[in-house]
Length: 306
Ligand code: CP
Ligand code: NVA
Image 1 (tube, rainbow, N blue to C red):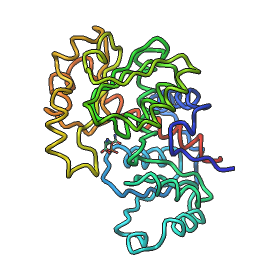
Image 2 (image 1 turned 120 degrees about the vertical axis):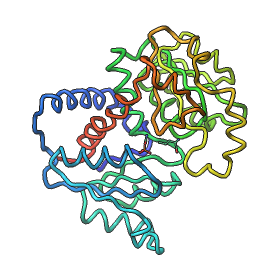
Image 3 (image 1 turned 45 degrees about the vertical axis):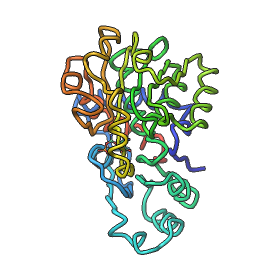
Image 4 (image 1 turned 135 degrees about the horizontal axis):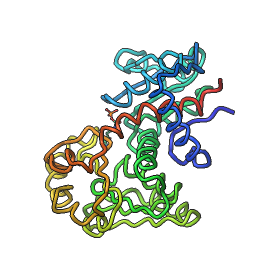
């Protein structure tokens, strides 16, 4: 049976192993070791939306693992002219060993996975961004050495990144407080799922409207853009509503002294985070971005039979 990664919960049982593998692969790569277990394997990558990190890290990951990646834009595919996602899935499965898909709609990713006979990896949709969270958890493990007993504060929009972080934190047993303005909470089903998982792992999941409550004594402070891809029509309203939720020096004073600042990037400096915070010694955003590469490798090795 092929395995997909659509929600971070799809790899719930293996998440800690994938993180360990990513850390191991990073060490190997630092030593300059050649490791090509995916020789002759191909990866199709469909991107409906722009990407810097996800696209480049998957492509470089495939090359370094001995395989090959193809970047596909729906604009240049028959998909953009009305060929169905089902037929696209069937056809691509005859050529490649896995498909990465960044889509506007989670239903499209699920449909592609349902009709593909090879693994499908969600490269961000309106619902989740699971690959990001594998790299984020890897970064937290590297910097803090554990998950249990840590408090992660996410301040901002209850969006795709927030959803995967809630579920991922619950799985690894890390406490997560999410502070957002009224009306920007993550979907109730996601919060419920995260709380159900947290009950089993002993993590605490809290949704609040108070950024200070979230950041108080936090080990990790995380934010993401206020206007995600696809939300551009709401830009003005969002910038108004999120203004009190900016991660700035005043807010991070409430965190632990050795807190780390994280952001999936791209950052909109001066909006969700100030230069002082993102450029501070507490910020690990570029290590986090680098870890996308090592995490993608671990994900590819986990899903592609080799
Ligand atoms: N964090 C992230 O997914 O970045 P890209 O949009 O550049 O891929
Ligand atoms: N929430 C952001 C993440 C970008 C990597 C978006 O969906 O645009």
